[in-house]
Amino acid sequence: MLIPLSIVFLCNTLLFLILLEDKFKLSTTLLCGLSCYVLSFLPAFILEKAVNHPALSISFSVFGNLFLLFLVSLFISYNNVLHKLLLSVICFNNYIFVHFLAERFLGALPIHASELKSIFLPVLFYLLFSFVIGLSFYRYFRYFSNRNTSPSVLGLILFHLLSIAFSLGYL
Image (cartoon, rainbow, N blue to C red; front, top):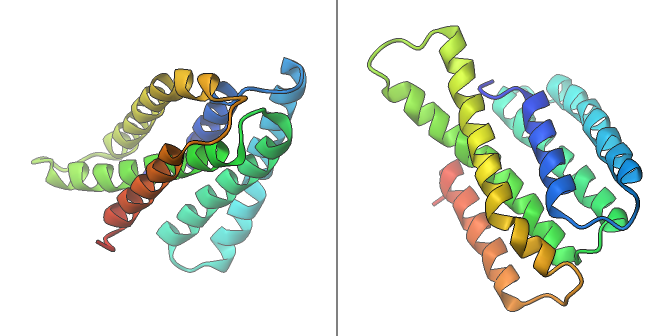
């Protein structure tokens, strides 16, 4: 396991809380985000025991976290459904891409990566890419929060799904 699930779940929850425009008070939104963060560990624990392949169980756990955040965001934010789906796909793409990049980067190091470096570098990559995603899409999600969807959202979703397929080795 390259990136601890607690950091992945926390970054995903923070991206949903920061980028989507909320309907309710800040305390209600934070309580919903915290409950999603805590509840995401239950499917992760079940999948860890049920699925034999560790990378597959972790990917399904991240998917479960994003599905739970997507369901909660349907009720607590003004953004339309496709924007919420886009954010879910972007977060999953971030996890898959950083996992792919960290495996390749740590495998290409000329020296043997110690245990601390093999945990620190993927976490640093994940935090950096999450920060860049937050900065890049903040204005976009705020500007389109109360508007109809545009066809470009479907194109962005398809682009990120192709990127996920490439990172997983299907293309």
